[in-house]
Structures are given as structure tokens and as C-alpha cells.
Length: 244
Image 1 (tube, rainbow, N blue to C red):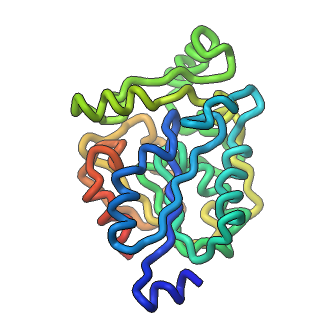
Image 2: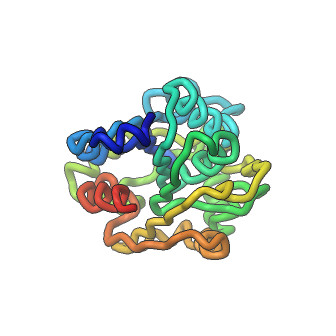
């Protein structure tokens, strides 16, 4: 259906998956731009975050979030999807590709956190960062959640944008970083994958995963934007997502 829609000028189907501590709200500017150009856009919020923060529990992990993404694809009966994952959201996207490849046309990882199959998100971070986040979860997250970071940590420095992001960020389920990425097939499941590397400035926390990306042979493109590019550079991000 989506392929036929493109032939008559009705646009593509995008599912935009947010990163840690964010929610579907963070895609507002990009989603508006895509819809204005005739595309269909879904911006789900992962369990335990954003407007679904009331569902936070010790049981919410990466596998929960993979099911969230697959659930959107299935419930909305989507096909030929451009599936986009930002930062931590790359992992639920790659998990969904393992389970629902027939619904996906291509994958875009926006400054994504990537690990090898069988590894948790924490393996992509520096050891001292892992220790700090675990400690923060014990002290300020009731042992089940990583407390929110400053918007500046995500490259959001404009005062109005930073205030918006600070209001909306919610603690990240700790288990989502501890639970390994369980896949039956290879990373990406044979689908075309583009990795958008944000360079202004570079978000060094996820740099360890770049080796995994390059070893996978995925297409690498630089994007002159900060880590939260969908907020700080929505025009450039939209253009990057639409590029074949």
C-alpha cells in the first residue's frame, strides 16, 4: 500500500523512535515538516517514558521497547516503512527489524547507540559512565531508573528549547540498558541501514558503537547538528531522512 501511495504522490510512511529519557514529543518539529510534504508519520513513545512514564517499573526493559515498536507496525498495519531510531532508540528499532522485517523498507539510525547482538546498551558506553548511571539509579531512581540528564548533555543549548526539553525528559528504565539485544538474525536483518552521525558537536558517549556500525557495512553520513538533531536542526534532519 505504501509503495503504491508513493507512486501517486502520497508520500512515504515514517515511524520515528525516540532515544533515552525522551518521548514521541521530541519529533514534533520533524514530524510536522514530513507531514507538510505529504508523508505519513508515527511517533510512538516507549513504555515507561514521556506520557507513558506512569508505566515505569523494574520489568520494563529493551525487549519491552522492541515490542512497543513492533506493536505500532502491526496495529497500524504498516508496510514499506522508513523506521528511524534516535540514540538509544536504535536498539528497539534493530530489535523490531529482527521480528518484522517484512514491514520495513529501510532503517535510519540518527546518532544511534549500537551494540553487537547479545550485548546490552551499557556495553556501548564508557565503564565510568556505566558506573555513574548505575549509582545515580540507586541514589535517585529508586533502583529502577536512570535520572534525567541536562538538555545540554544532548546538545540542546537554546534557552527556550532547553526549557522545553527539561520539562519533558523522564527517567530511563534501568533495565533497558542492562538487557541484551536479543536477535535471531544478523544486525539489521539484511535491510538497508543508514547511520546519520551528528557532528556539531559529536556526542562522544556513543562513539564505541561506531565500530559496530562500520563493521556492519552500513552507509555512513555526517549531519552537521547536535545529538538531539530533531530538536536543534529539524530542517536538516528532515532533509536527511528523506534522502534515499
